[in-house]
Image 1 (spheres, one colour):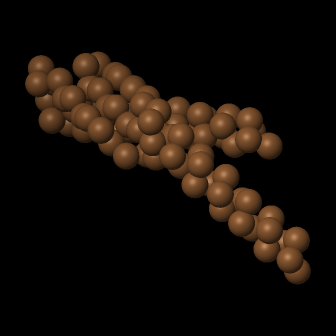
Image 2 (tube, rainbow, N blue to C red; image 1 turned 135 degrees about the horizontal axis):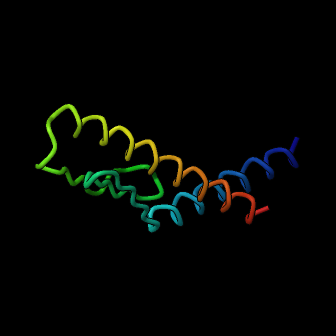
Length: 85
């Protein structure tokens, strides 16, 4: 029982350490002048729209760049988790 409690504590410590590391990481994605910058905790830092595009296109490209930035963060997080083992 105590070894599993110790393992749980170590896992929680590693998770907090990973979250702290990821908060300092920034990723960007861009499509047709629409850009998003996100930190490693999946928080949007900036969103830049392209005023030369219509509203529908801005929305379409915003979805694309959000999804791309999320994928980048998830890949980085997976790499960091693998490195911690």
